[in-house]
Length: 264
Image 1: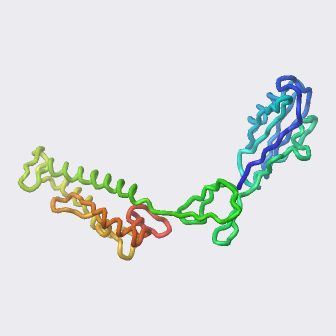
Image 2: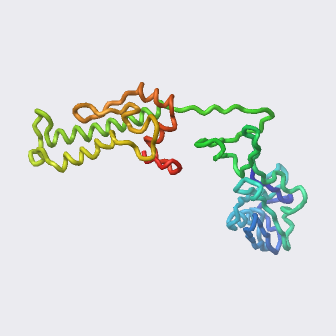
Image 3: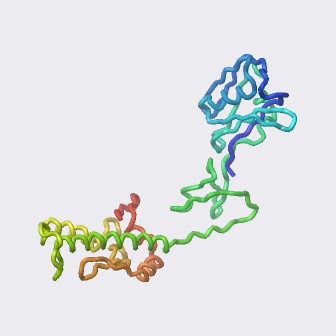
């Protein structure tokens, strides 16, 4: 698993007693350097606050063992490239002593299909397209990850789209009149601008979606059909069958995909 560095300092008898150190503490993470000035009146608590406010990607706190107090400096970022080194000048905080770092910064390592992969965090992307692998424990044997398509939540969103679309169509019909139904707003009766706007909206449903190909290239091909009055109906069974047959092509109808050029 990827880990951040954790380092303990030397033990002191109290956390709020002036230590009498006069000097500086250098903090290096890769090419980034920060420095903390330590005054003779600084307590362990004061120094911890200065480290946390130094701008370095670390946080510091005072750790009580039950009888003594120690500085605990923790890196904010995991990964081997975020290892922290300390340089003490005029101080004896013990952060650079041998064995002070009890958890080294390290990358996550895993194998997928026999290929070894390293990442600086435990949120691994780019290995399985569209999937983030959240690493949580070290394993001695392979783990099988099953990725499924959640069609239920997608159908709920499509149903909401259909309801919103039909609301627009019905409002235009009510305002401008439709069939034998008289308009409630005579100023808009048979208004050509409203008709053209509605026609533009309706054309979205029947047109081929840019960047798609094969069997599923229109919304109608996956179950969204225009009825005689211009509203939409949704055939959930037809949608399920399309997803089962070619989920990638169906997805391109609803989302923008820069790699394929689809504009769903």
